[in-house]
Structure formats: structure tokens, C-alpha cells
Length: 305
Image 1: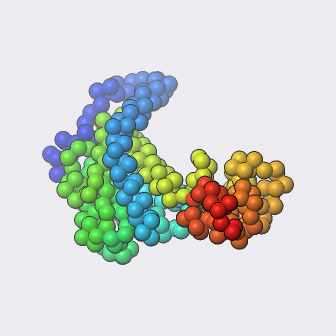
Image 2: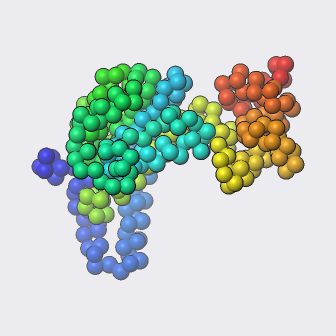
Image 3: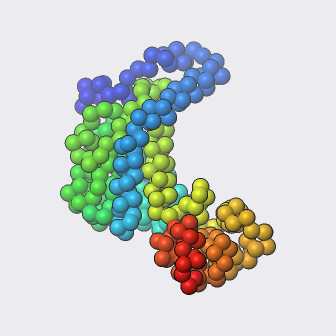
């Protein structure tokens, strides 16, 4: 294993940062920033693979399936972070996007000894969640060879799920399991082995793109407005009303009234204002359009509302 690790891009010495321990603070920050700037450009070439992965996720959502992110350590935490942002941002059920980490919830904060080396545990975590043909599983590992993640991916594939691999090296064991690979190779880390940095940032960017693209394609966005958010606190209530106002150009009084009558449902309030219908009429229009606000408004004049 040690010889194999030595060959990984993520385990190479970064020639540009070899003298970083002798630099003043501002120069260290500048050097880290210069390395970070390489990440987005490296991901640009992966647009087709990321889009194909998003399409698998979209297909799962349309079939009533779920998205699972599976990882260990930093990769697992990033999956949990992206998954946990979906319900408040897009009003999704918490089961729709799930983060699964080696060692369970305790591993979000503390290292769980040996968990990431246990392929059987990865497989059993897929069984425990009843992963099936309508689901998509994204295995995340900087090295592309974490046993827990590989075990989960292999079992998910056996259960009929679509399986995506996200790693930061080329030609890893993930490639022999996944239906689709995203090899986000961004070069050696600023500090050797600290894959929470460039590799982790690349993973976060990919995960952001996957869920955002999928949510757009299933009708959670109108224009570029987040119209399916769950206004669970004062800040989000303010944001919800602001989105309604931006989408409709209605007055503050009209927005407040539509928000109240819609029960705080942003999509419904927007359709009420733009289609000139009540809450029930807006609900029917949204149901007929599959939840797409633009289509609901467009069909308003061709239905009985």
C-alpha cells in the first residue's frame, strides 16, 4: 500500500511550495491562493463528466430515488455538508440527499479508528439504507482507493444503483467499480498529504455543481432564484419574501399578503401573483407543470386556473 500511495498525485511534493516554511505570513497566504486558483481551471476539462453525473442524479430524483455521498474523513464531511444544505436551500426532504461517512455521525467531528479501512462496513451502510436501482451513489476519496468507499460503491452497484466515483488521482481502483468517474486531479498539495486543501476544495466545487444542477433541472429554481427554500428562520423568511418580490416585481404589501395566503410557500406565492390565481389555483398549476414555476405561469391562460 505504501508504494502505491507514493505514486499518487495527491502524495507528491509540490515544487512550488517547498520553501513555504521560510516565508512571512502574507507570502504564505499568497502562495496558497495561487495554488487554489489552479483548481477551477483543472475542473473545466471535466465538464462532460460532471454533467453526465448530474444527469444520473436527475434521473434518480425524477424516479423518486435518492442521492448518497459516501466518503471517509474530509471527503465524508464534505458530502454531509452538501447534503445538509439541500433541505433549507431547496426544500427537499432530508432523505433525498444523504451524506454517509465511515464511522458514522461521530466521525463528523472525531476520527474513528480503522473505519475508513473497512470495506465491509461500507457495504453494510448501503444495505442499511436500502440503496436500490432508483438511487445514485457518489463515492468520494482523494486517493481513489479508500476501502470503506470502495466497499460501499461495489455494494451499491450490486444493488442496481448508479455509481459515480469522485477522486483526485488518475487510474484508481474506483474506476473499476464506478459507472462514471470524475478524476479531479489538481496537482500536489501546498502541504504534502493535506488533501483537505486543494483536493477537498475540488471535491466541494464538484458537489456544489452536482446538486445545484440537479435542483435546477427538477424545477427548484426560477430564473436564477431559489424558489423552493424552506423559510425556517427570520433570515430565510426575509429571503423568501425578497425572492417573491424579485420574481414578481410586486409591492411589499402584495408580497406580504401572497406569502401569508400561500402559507409561506415561495413557489405558490409567485404563481399566485404572476398568474392572478388563488392558492388552490396556483397549486393546480404547479402540479400540472411538475413544479416548474415558469411552466405553471405559461399554462395559466390555457387552463381554468
